[in-house]
Length: 307
Image: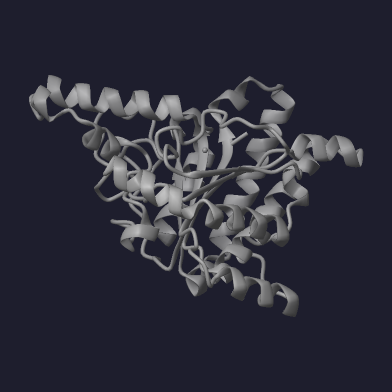
């Protein structure tokens, strides 16, 4: 399955999409793609098949987002906590990652056609070296595309991301590159894996779970959170429309919160400022302490991952 499924909306879907787009639209949507294992159990298939179906649904959802004019999507593909699952399941997920990133490199012309920039966010040295290499190639191959952005959170948790940012600032002070007074919320913001992206306007979690599972905790403080009971492989265009409608119903309240909070910088909300992500395709900031980087990613901060 391609990373972006080809195909257009049906007449009814286009009609509904046009109605929805008449209102305020989220520019950045984050997904916790939950329910692959329960879907496999429900359908009496192997867990690996459930995860594979989940990737196919991601490809379809990306197409819907493009049709709706959603410019940036962030997905929780693999949590650091997922390493605690059975060796069989973890190995299966790593094999799936190998297949999909290899496929991405084969279809780079399709990504170029749509202008899709791929970013991978997480602590990549935790991954097998061959996967690190594939990810580095994929990021470099799409780094100059800027029509839309797909952030894949892989080997990621928000607490790990924040603690890494704090270590970066502490190292800067220790090396004399920063004064203690330079340390601020704004600086921490810029040390996060997501520093090149605006905060998500809308976060969607499937499967009926009502928690964030250590995903984008810092970035979603003013996002609209939508929890839907549908299992991820069964997600539909209408589920996405429902989530966007709920965002629109809460838009004025979200706008008020943002104005009161007054957060500024490169990651200010795009539906208020219209700002585009900076340095599209950047794999990270200089980090001389990064260990075991993949070839082609030497001297960069760890790239940036779900359940």
